[in-house]
Image (cartoon, rainbow, N blue to C red; front, top):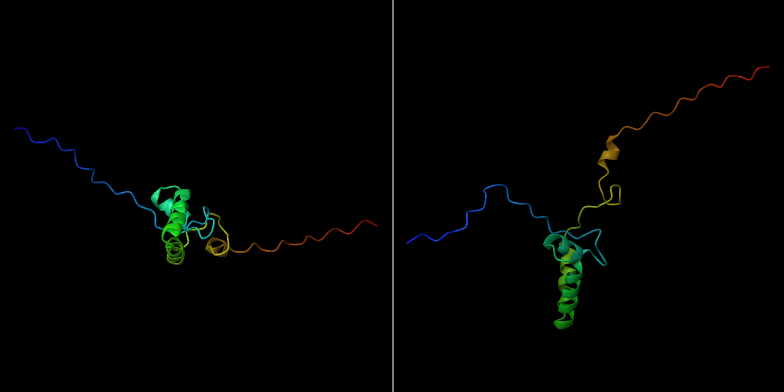
Length: 110
């Protein structure tokens, strides 16, 4: 009797890193919760929105769950540097340029 043919074990390399669950700053209508869930799970944000509306209509819990996630989920990183609320350490680290020296203009000929 032959042993069963098992699939080979997965390679022992580094596991893919899963992104952190954060509110989206780009795909948002109200608080960015559905956009963040979409980025985390790979499911379209529209389907998450439909799910929250269905929960709200069915049992009334959709609003409560959404508000809890809005409060508990941290905001994602800003996609645009220099937006309010983002760190501007790179700008602060650069020294200011020296003031331009004024050149004495030659006096007009008499």
